[in-house]
Amino acid sequence: MLHGTAATVVLLRDAPDGLQVLLLERPRHRGSFAGAWVFPGGRVDPEDYGLPAGSAEPAANDDGELAAALRAGVRETGEETGLHLQEPDLVRLSCWEPPPEAPRRYRTWFFLARAPEGEILLSPDEHVDAVWLSPAEAFRRQQAGTMELYPPTWVTLHGLAGAQTVAAALAAAEAAEPLTYTTRQLAGQEPPVMVWHGDAEYPQAPGEPEARHRLVMDGDGWLYERTP
Image: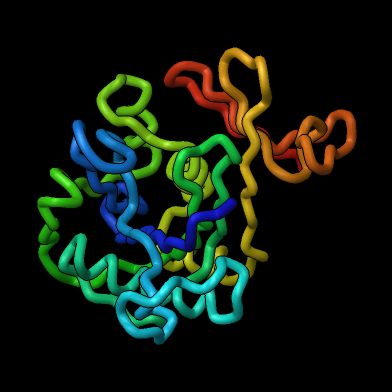
């Protein structure tokens, strides 16, 4: 059962060595994703649906979920970074649902946006550090053991690795059909393997025998495989 809906905003900027992404470090000893580096974002609140404060959030598949996620993405980005966006600035990228065994399960909409000008002002209750990095540098730090990434963050960075500019990344996202990642972890696999629709071993709807849509989490040397 899903516990609600959330929004994540992947902020991008152009740099002399190519595209950079903003990553925020979660506190190490408390809260969700403790110690991980994540994109800005958070839960969709009832107010994002236009409901009074304190109301129950509508079911995750109710009409208006995407619009509410857009509003939440703008709000959370402002609260967590001090950078202020408008809803039209956000380009839908993907939607993620964690595996059934996850303790808290939120359907999370991912959006791309060009970062506005301004100083990063962290909310100390939410994050303890911030850094602008290329996807390649984020992977290098993960492999060195100095940056913890979760699968949705890693796969998103992997998808951005080929874009040289913000304009190119936004154009590619606008032209593509947003992917939905309903995650399942293969039982008994070492290293752990996360699979999605289209993979030959996806539990709910297996793909062709040789088809792959998975993330092999082999230590710090993760491998994303997706056949056409």
